[in-house]
Image (cartoon, rainbow, N blue to C red; front, side, top):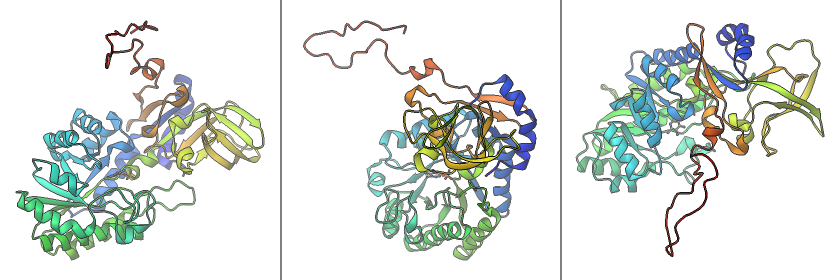
Length: 428
Ligand SMILES: *Cc1c(COP(=O)(O)O)cnc(C)c1O
């Protein structure tokens, strides 16, 4: 849906100056909006020991991660590169949760060394590792209420987690192996906007955690209810009622753990930054084929969600008024017909030169970008709390595109005594 009033009021008056100084396309994020959303989450859990760990994959930019860390957020990592990034921005020890799946022993060791809170996704893997972290947590497979999630898979098709029926056994085993602190993780939602469903999913994990802890005779240090909360991409969507959600989780925690009770951890990405970013583009072509076509100077490589999942992203022409409405396909330049930001979208008739804003690109936007067709990833800018605009990632260029290519092929395996003699095709 359209960006927040606060972002619009601070950005739109200076947008012309920004694009005069800086080429489109670029993503721009609202530091104030991100901090505001983060603080709102913490306040909604006031009185409950809770920590939100930002899912790094949603927006892996050092400036944004640093901003969130400074606010008190932790970071949720799922790969060695994300662990290294968290380390470089100053996250240490239990500032980091490591919630990977199909994990390698090497990356497990890296997370262990970093002192991260590690979630085991898999029982067989847990049995293979030699040393355990101080706190052992397992991710529970989607089950029960979670059955309907396309992204997570239902109980019969998921690749995630330990089946609920095996949890008591694995915690007992962890205790036998010397573990003394325990957590449980369950993430069932994906872009969930319905508070009742999100509450049911979280409460399910809290209650299951309590039953399993009692049966395995362990005490839970934390219950991690994951991420997956939705944002209103469509103008008619209602924003997620986070205070109601936090209240219901708080009550479930009290009911299930009448004593002191475990901490609540969350791993939201999209909910924290998603609405606070836009992709600023310009219309570079306008044509009529079987359909009305509007060509932008950005491609799916800068924002994959619409082309990949058919996801809706709101689109607006901020400085256009008084034009008749038309229905258009808004496209990028990849040699792929799916490279469309919108299909059959009503909007005031776009013209070459118009600025076009694609909304809600603050999470899983630039991060899912790619470089196919040599359409390289655009820059990321940040509108700071003071109202300054800073570059937090430049646009990629030709050297980046070929940074990993060997102009001079490197020997990997020589057979028959022949030495690689291929000529260099260029510098490097
Ligand atoms: C992707 C993911 C998240 C974050 O998801 P959002 O939809 O961005 O909130 C959190 N935890 C895990 C394990 C994930 O895979």
